[in-house]
Picture: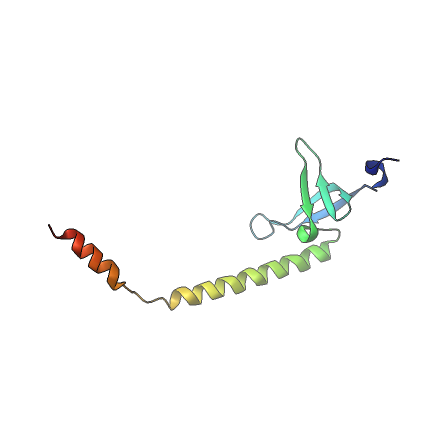
Amino acid sequence: MSATTDKKIKTVIAYVTKYSLTTGTEEVTGEVEGKMLIIRGKYCTYYHGNEWHMTLEDAYKRFEEMRESELTRLRKKTTRIANLKFKVKQDSLVKFAESLQP
């Protein structure tokens, strides 16, 4: 047997969570090969690791993890922006002022 026929490929209904926070979780029919989900069509699309799930419950758990992670990131960013102060670097002003003199 060749290496390609040794791999077991099975067709399943899976839930893709890769884009859950932007376009939503998608229910798809694809082929599982190892830890990879392959969606065949005009072009093949590959999903790896925790980008896809076999059960709706696992997909929901991953969505919640992604959502919490994004909220934490946005809170940090909001805090950083809220604490920004207007600053002017002195060297920049000196160079700019010098460039204005004839």
